[in-house]
Length: 276
Ligand SMILES: [Zn+2]
Image (cartoon, rainbow, N blue to C red; front, side):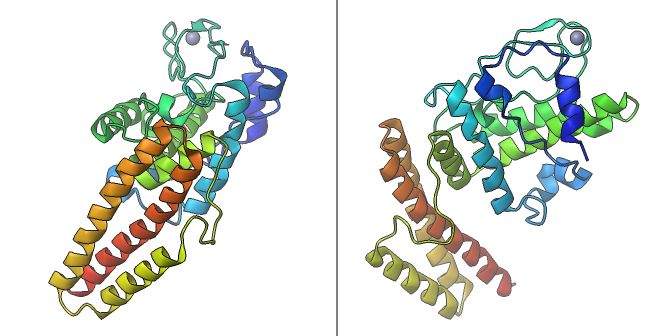
């Protein structure tokens, strides 16, 4: 576990040019995580660790970035930092390592997941580039690389690595990516409600769910899966258009629909596993 208090003490040695607003908010320090979480490729979707509600709670904490940065270009934290070890100016945001002494740096407040993953701030981001960036970062930040380093460096490695995992997971799937973008714009979907979904849509979903429950063959389940994929692709295009135009309420309603169809997609996978 990486105590918040220790981070504050460490960070106080850095020349941080924050506004008073930002100084009252601190980046949530990710819990120390097991290697199975760092090795996302094999066990990334372990819900016991990366519970969506926990993610949502963490995402809410990122709202403060809007106070410091433009929401549309929520891409730069507009802060100037120095290396905690040698005090050399860190000219990039985020700087995972000092380019003078090459020591790992702690996570920087107010840096969006898009910036961490070096992706353009848009809904239809390049997931291949995202994955390449993820693997590149984890190669250098993974705690295994720091077992012989100081305790402080080990802690920074764990927190940076966990943060990169979270950024990757959030941006990888359209649904969580869209929700995160709405978060950055100051909106969020209410949990456990049918917000944005009309009765016709809910009726349609009920029928799809019934058809899936009654599916007797893999072909029948696959047909529902294929239809759902098509609907998700359509929704992706519509959400992208809405976000580009700044129509946040439209994007929110479409994301609600996406949430339901993504849920059906998961149920189709479960159903197909029953036939195996
Ligand atoms: Zn340095």
